[in-house]
Image 1 (spheres, rainbow, N blue to C red):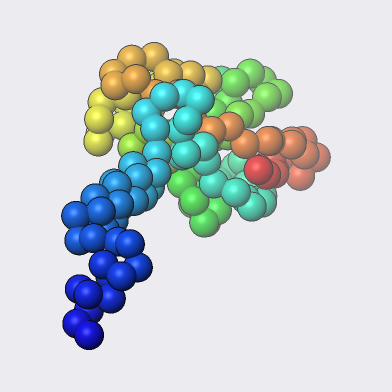
Image 2: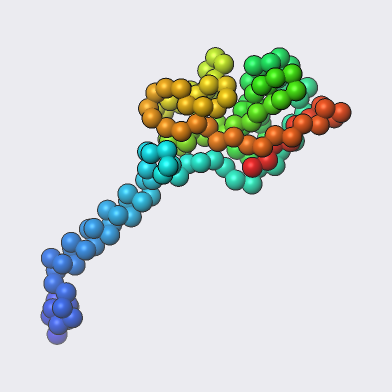
Length: 150
């Protein structure tokens, strides 16, 4: 008995098999791509970050509004000095395109699709997306450090 005869005996013809297989493949590709909507974005940010930063090592953080890219955290992170006593940390992974965004003036820009974000991580223009993922920051003024966690 040929393979085709076995399939027909099981109630599956070639056309049904190909249509079902194609539909499943398309569904898998679409699921892997995620969604451009704010609610469906699969690029929300990195997990398991725990980094201690010595502020004196980043001159830009000496003034309010200063932004520094932190090295050694395992993921690209920017720290913004929001006030005399407050620091904020953001993932530099674009929530839409998944590429690394850059510091641009007093904010950030995704070179992949042109989205812009202000110094508070909020989306301000370019291709529609959400804001940057924000980490939790704890300050230790005695040690002159901040600890960034997710």
